[in-house]
Image (cartoon, rainbow, N blue to C red; front, side):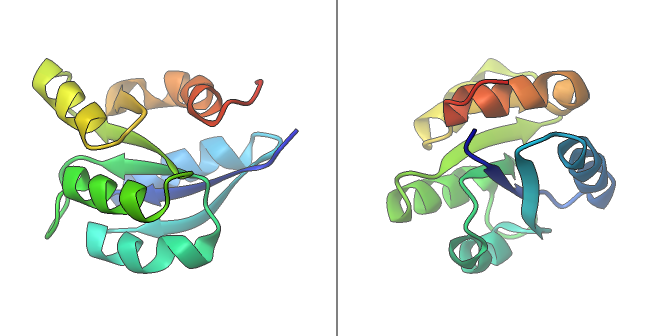
Length: 125
């Protein structure tokens, strides 16, 4: 199975830590980078060799929607999953319109993230 390399972009360090622990427990998955804001991920994602990005909608500086647009234009093969604390249809629609392939409410991340990563990356769980 192809390894999934995840980059986490979220300003909440506790959330990043929980996601990292979840991913570290999975075979064929690894966290290759973390970013506390969108500007950092724009600089680092290319050298990280990530193939999936978990992107928070709301971060300091540039928001996740604009960062997703820039990333998916620069790296078309990159798969982005947008996360937010809000379960709002407008956020979901904006995330998909920006180039994200999935949207996840943070409270559901520990149960739904792994299947969603497999879905957007086209791998089997």
